[in-house]
Picture 1 (cartoon, rainbow, N blue to C red):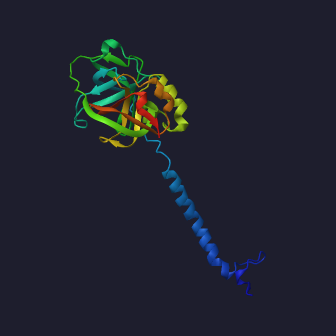
Picture 2 (picture 1 turned 90 degrees about the horizontal axis):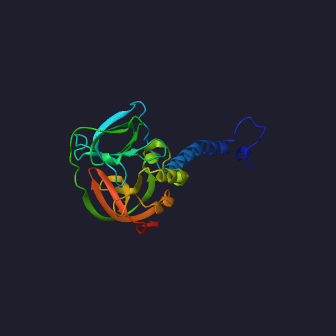
Picture 3 (picture 1 turned 135 degrees about the vertical axis):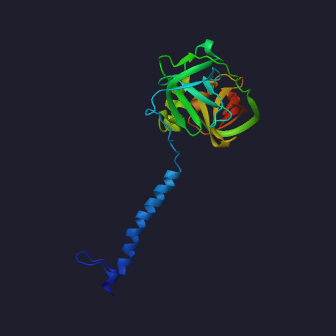
Length: 248
């Protein structure tokens, strides 16, 4: 039997019968590892590119403030946002924005640091003061009813998901999200597929108030949610009751 197919430990050369096999293994293993890495990474949710825009520093926006279902700042139409633009508001840390009831429905100036992810914008209000009355009057666009929808997605707190923490979704973020929502931060539904061009909806109860507290323990899980969807400017709001939410 030829010794060209046998590996000899003390030999100074690789047997010719094994050279091709070993070359294939040496080339194939890195390729297979790269393909496996790509496959695994594709199965993991994108943590998002959102973050505080510290480089820009504090910014001041002017618009109409509404308190329900959560404090929202409605900006006037612009070239970039022909239908106007709605900005979510938060306080510092895991706290919702504190809005004086006297400012509801009025023109205000809001100062704070911006967070952005995709089409969602949030301002973390400053302390000195973050909101103050401003001159001028403007009319809010009437909500547009888009009917009743059955959607699949995950409930997240709007601040962490927008970029305050990464990942801002999933089971790994569940405890943080529950604390954020308990502190009054706005909850958003991140959908598995776009709804009217958007992949997130602000959540409210069936009457348009804050999301039912009974839904907080469901953050981080894939859910089926059914409720009425309405458009406020360029923001979609899903109004639902606990009975309309089911684990997938």
